[in-house]
Image (cartoon, rainbow, N blue to C red; front, side):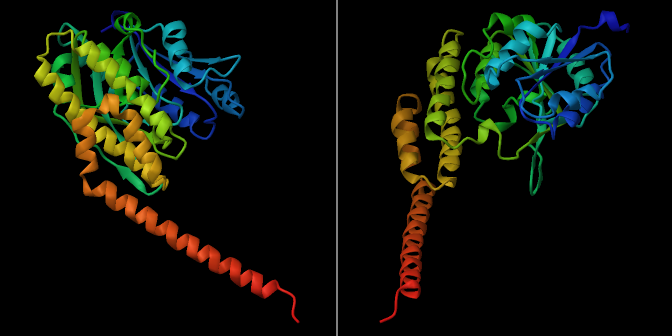
Length: 335
C-alpha cells in the first residue's frame, strides 16, 4: 500500500531535562516500520544538552520544538497534541522511555483499521528499574467497547500505558485531552475517550517505561495523590451517562479504586510518613467512599506497615540520643 494511502501517525516525545535518555527514545521512534510517520520532540525548556542530542539526528521525519518557557509536564502534553501533531493518530512517548518493537505502530494501525469505531489501540510495556526488567500480564488481541473497559479497569491487563497507547487525534481533540494537571492526566483523558467508541488491545509488549525515581507517578506526596484521585470522579461521571447500569458502575468504581488507594498508600508509607497515609484517606474520602476506606483500614498491611515505621522511629530516636550522649561525654572537659 502506498504511504499516502495510510493515515499519518505522530509520535510525540515530550521531554524535560532528559538528555541521558532522549537519544534512545528518538532512535526507537524512528526505527518504527510504519511508513507514514512523524516524530516530534517537544522540549519544555530543558536546562541541559537535550537540543544538542536531538541535533545529532538527520531524519526528515523528525522535528524539534523548544518551548520558550517551561510549561510543566501536562501543559506540554497538551501543547504537543493541540498545536504540533498533524497525524490522524497519536502516541505519547516520554523522553525517558523507548520502544523495543519496531512493528508496534504498523500492527496497531492494522488493528485500528480492522473495525469501525476504534478510537484507541493499546499494547503493553515492560518496566525497567535499577534491579532489572518487569514484564506485564498480557491480554490476547481483542476489541472491547469503552463501557466494557471501564467495567474491567480494576484488572491491570486492561490498563492504558501512555507510551503504548495509540489514539485517534480528532476524537481526542473533541474530548478536551490533558485538561487535568495531575499525575494520571493520561488515564483521565484516555478513559473518557474510550467511552466514545471502541478500544483494541494489542497482545504485544512494545516498549519500556524507565522507572528511575524522577517519574511523576512515583510522587509520594499525599496531597498530590489526593488531587490525582479526582480523575476517577471525572471518569465515572462521564461513564454514568453512557447507559451502564448504576449498580455495575458502582461496583467497578470500588473495585478500581481499592488497588489504586493501596498503591498510593504504599508510596506514602515507603517514605515513612504514616501520618500522611491517614491524611490521604481523610481527604480522599469523598472519592474513595466508605466501603473502600473501611476495606483499607481493616487490612493488616496498613497497620503492619505503620507499626514497622513507628518502631523504626523509636529505635532511631534511642540510637540518636545514645550517640549524642556519647559525643557529649567524649568531648566534655576533664576535671
